[in-house]
Length: 138
Image 1 (spheres, rainbow, N blue to C red):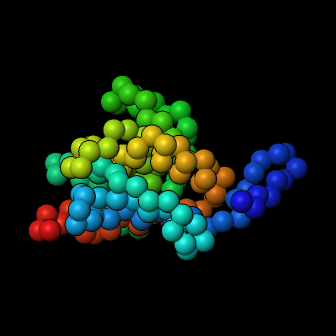
Image 2: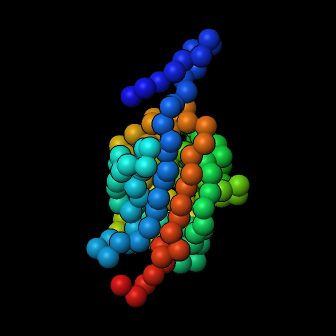
C-alpha cells in the first residue's frame, strides 16, 4: 500500500475508494469495497428495516469515527462512517440475512474495522447504494 506522509505525520491515501451496497439473489444485501476501481473486499451486510429503509442514491463519506457512540440508541457503533447528512452510517454490528437496522448499513466486525482502517485517511470516498436494495421479488 502506497502512503504519503505529510510533515505532521498524518497519512494520506493514494487510492480511490468506492463503496457499493446492493441486493443479491442469495442474501438480502452485500457490500463491495473497490480500491482504484478493482474489487478489494466484499461482505454480507444488514440494511434498514422496511419501516426505516436505508437511503438509496450516491453519497460521499462525510465523517469517520472509530469509537462512535450513539446517544439516540445508547449503543457503541465502532468503525463508524457517515454517508448521509442525517442518520445513515456504516458501522460494526451483528449482520443478519434480513434487514435489521434503523437505516444504517451493518457490517461484520472484522470487515467494518478493515474498511475503516483502509479509508480513514482517504478524503473522498464515493458510496453507491443501489436502488435494487429493496427488491423483494427475487
